Image (cartoon, rainbow, N blue to C red; front, side, top):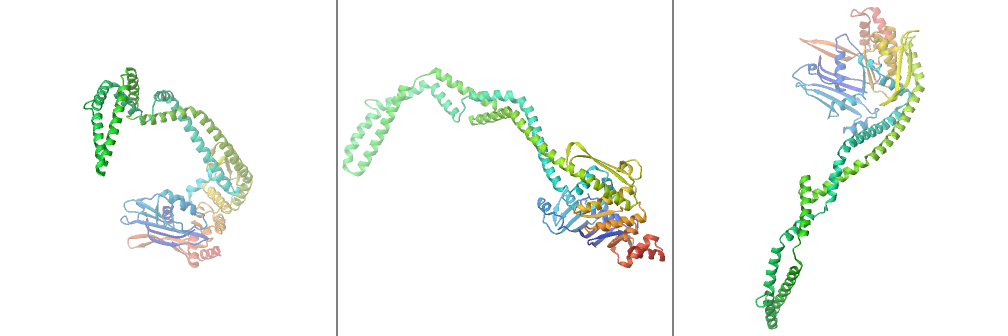
Amino acid sequence: MLVHLSIKNYALIDDLNVAFTKGFTCITGETGAGKSILLGGLSLVLGKRADLSSLRNKEKKCIIEAEFQIDKYNLKSFFQENDLDYEERTIIRREIQPSGKSRAFINDSPVTLDVLTRLGSNLIDVHSQHQTLQLTENDFQLKVIDALAGNKDLLADYGGKLRLFKATSKELSELIEFQKEANKEHDYNSFLLQELQAAPLKLGLQEELEEQYEQLNNVENILELIASGHQLLNDEQVGIVSLLTELKQLMNRLSGYGSQYADLNQRVQSVFIEVDDIASELQTYQEDTEANPQLLEETNSKLQQLYDLQKKHGVQEVSELLEIREGLSEKVSVTENLEADIEKKEKELAAHKTALQKAADVLTAKRKKVIPELKKQLEDSLKALGMASATFKIELFKSNDFKANGADGLTFLFSANKGGDYGELKKVASGGELSRIMLTIKSILAKYENLPTIMFDEIDTGVSGEISGKMGDIMQEMSRSMQVFSITHLPQVASKGDHHFKVYKQEEGAVTKTNMKELEQEERVVELAEMLGGKELSDSAMAHARQLLN
């Protein structure tokens, strides 16, 4: 429910503050007084795009603020999803800077226009001439049928199944497309993989082969160095082993003269053992090392294979070749398994489609069941609004695809006259007829849905005084369960309001301003009398005005 509206520096409005309450509120005023300006300002806090030309003073910013009581609107999840502070009294503010920059706030948190628009659609339903055209659209007509059928939960279930179906369908399309691309590369990837699998790749292999190659390629130099080393160690006269033997004997005798000599002897013994072991190993290497041209060739061949693979794949390490091999293996495997994956996804899609079709069929059945009731309510209500011969022909038919609201098409035909041909609303209904039909539909929706505040912008245009009074009765009845506003030129409607506001212009020096005030009882009589007979108030107009109010 809209409880307060503040507009500053917008069009002809300098500074306007208005408080509203529940029930039926009528807004009147002379043509050009600024009723449309008021609605335009309200539209800005509901998400409409800002226009710099609407600033009254181009050097100051425009601020429009609306406060809503939202505790009955089940909007806590919306606030959580958009990371906003939830308040039962929520304030929406819109600012337009002189530079043209616009900012929006919900409970002082900055938000995008998209978030503002989505919240606004849950707070106020502004009915304008443009929205009357919505009446001619199948989606809106189905929404009315679903409201009568109580299909809210079924639509939510259908929507969940539709999302699953669409997501699976997309995944299947992506798999098929991927298969097309993968098949083009499959043969080449398989060839590359076979090359890498033929190579004995393992971590440390390159270092091992390079070391082996160095040894085999320099075997003569290695043998020469081993022989020299062996000779230095084992020469009978001056060999290191022979000399260390003599030293060991000397130290052994010396060790008996004190602990410090014993320690020295122990160290010499250790050196002798180590040198003697080295001599033995050199002897073994000398015996085992020999030229092996065949092994050299094999090692060189393996190394060259590694170098070629590294060059081909643009890497320098065996570990990188192993990663490439793993990646190729996965690609080849995925490609080879795609057929099975596609088949599995097709079965999954078929299952989702079956479940979706069942949900759509349940919706169709419930819709068909309430169509006669909707037709009766529409025709009965329109009789009271001067359309005694108005009839509808409403039929469902199967759609070729799954839409957001089911799998139904809808024929919603109208005839205003007895024996007249049926046709689409937008082709056969006049503006006045569309307005009355829309009001009737809104009143029906109000019985079945928790509608937000609704604002009718001259919905009574083009109807007679007697009919407009009945339209006022309908809006008054709607206001028992929701807040209803009506911007009207007709006294018969304005007299039905629980509250009556007048929009008027006033001149202050060379400046014209639009203002708004709530009328007291006697002020309402005068306003209604002027609406009935003009500025020159006659006794009969005043009497008629009092009669309307009573």
